[in-house]
Length: 154
Image 1: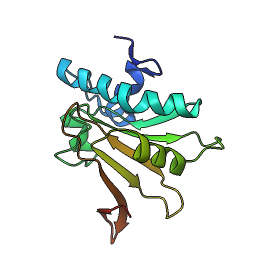
Image 2: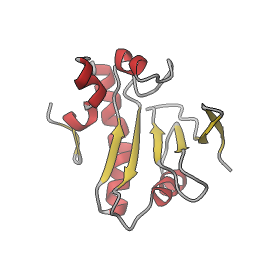
Image 3: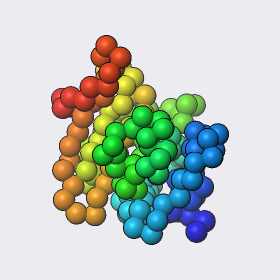
C-alpha cells in the first residue's frame, strides 16, 4: 500500500525515528490499517480540505513494542490505528489552535487533546477516531511535577 488517504502516505503514517534507530517493526495489520484509513478520511482529509495547506503528522501508528519503548500509554489508540498527533507547519500563518477548534466544532472524534504548549497555542493536537461510539472527549495535557496530567478542556 502506498497511501492511507489522498494526503497521507503509508510511509508517513508508520514512520518513527525511534523504530528506525532501534530496529523495531512498525507495521499495522489489516484491522489497524482499516482504522487508520477511517481516521484519515474522517479527520485528516476534512482538515486538509478546510485549511488548504499541509498538516504535519508527528505520530500516527505505533506498534505495541514501539509504544512501550517511547513510554506511551498501554491503552494508546495509536496502537489500534485510531489516533494521530498533528500540527500546522512551523511557517504557516494558520495555528494549531485554529486546527484544534475546527476539529472540535466540526468533526466527529473520540478524543481531542490540546497537547502541552500554553493557553494560547497547543504544541500539537492529539486526535482519535472510532468508526462507532466516539466519546467527543476534549482534554488538555499539561506536565505537572514531571508527570503528564489530563484535564477536561474548558
